[in-house]
Length: 387
Image (tube, rainbow, N blue to C red; front, side, top):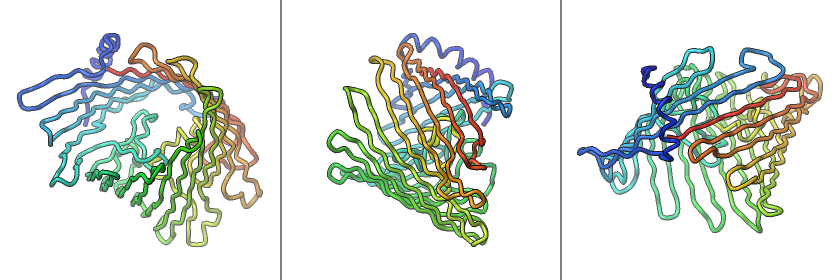
């Protein structure tokens, strides 16, 4: 759906006024609905990369989202979100990012969501709306949710939206079931996902455990894949992640993590043993530069974070990357090292600043999973406005 450009620029121009008025939502009512809330976001980001290897080495991105949250009565609701995203020198994309209806407590059993919507599960290693992206991710379809006294259960059947997290491929679908329950002090998530994208038709099953003990917070996730990687080739990937965090010296936070995703070194044996990521939040887990994906990868990470004051926080991560499978020709597996530094804080009540710097130091391998086989520097600054 195309949004008139005049509307987009009008929304962007008017966005500043509500920010200084410290108002994030504009309520309104009509005789046929219980409530209508209008809100949105306006975001600007600049990025620079060195060495400059393509036109994308310097990007200046902008995104506007305008939301209408409608509650007809206690049982019927709707949400509509328009989006315009662009970068300097390119044609802007105007889309319907979300548009769905909800029926609450249907048959006194489930909540139903139908239309186009974002999805987020667990810690976003498997399914994420990927807000870092200038377009984000959305899915078209239906989702049922049952909320018990001690658990929730979701079942969904969808198609990823093209240009919002999906490849340009007419034959694609994504469905699954997700179960969450707390056992004592441990939160548990259990899931099965089915994906069809081009020639790939596979299943991902796994679980996530999270808890706290003796001042430490921790989580562990394991996922396995099976099915068809392509015609005549079986899929058989495995991935797991472990992490633990604690606070020292007051509010100073430090943590460690280890993440693994299998790779495939023999493409002629009739099977692909490499883990194929679903819709994960790559920007958060495997380096802010987004040079690597969760395939044929081991990542040992050390994380630190601390508040500067009540409003501003900084963080610093160190990633040590290896290939899960050594290169056959060279026997090398060390991919490199990445340092990420960032700063976040609010300018006023509704304007969020986020900036950072990353340095990647290349390793010994002749091919890096999606990255250059050389050192890279990257810097960014982003301002987000809520209105």
